[in-house]
Image (cartoon, rainbow, N blue to C red; front, side, top):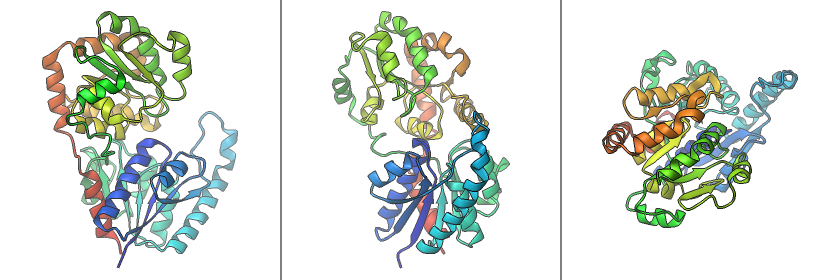
Length: 365
């Protein structure tokens, strides 16, 4: 009999893309599986999930607003409303199991599933578990993690080291280097650095590139520079639409596979989804963790790679001053690049989506 699975969470691409990967894996294993996503109204999952071909329902839930205490006055009412909506959705859909990938909607949905005796699985993407997942871990059937040492947050018997699901199309880079360089209008004779701050962008990375732009061009190093939609216009206003040959500036990367394939060195934030992809593509990496995330989990993610010699960590507060020099030093050191590539490749877990999907079927009642 076909299973019915609820997948909850979202808020950022780092949560949404793994969720969709898990759904795709469930459908590959058993095409008859019925899937319902539950997200937060107004967040990007409400657009991305239907675009991937899945049904989604929205909860009226938001996180704690650190910058506006007034907005938090409605939070208890939103939580209660979301719990009631989650109960209604579960009664209507009657799932065999639930999956939480993190994000605002995940907490109310999994807590309600536990109260209604629906078995659930947590997919914890970061090396440092948030408070919601730590509380939900007590009743979870399984907890799929991407980093070692997660016993300090969850019951050891429930933990499975699966890695984070990756976008298969994004990491399919084999044999694409020539195509990639042509796509971005770059030269095969020069070294190429990819800078990516995710779909929304990263202010520090953009400021660091602006500060070091002359150094890169004077060393004849090419750039694929993804600014993110928040920063694209300000970057273009500062350096112009055509800042010179060998510099490709883009708001968003629709062909992440070609960006990875072209790169000799990658500079990125340290979100869990990004790290999972970087491990699979096996390129030298500099991680500049965002300090503006819960429990500073990006720094902890980055240290977990740096401690294995699998990435170079540059703190956010020194990046604008030092990132360009560090990047040029690494890209011009072939033995260092080879060492970083080998070490990050050892951490890759490319079949995480299939492993997690199999565990979901195991717990389905």
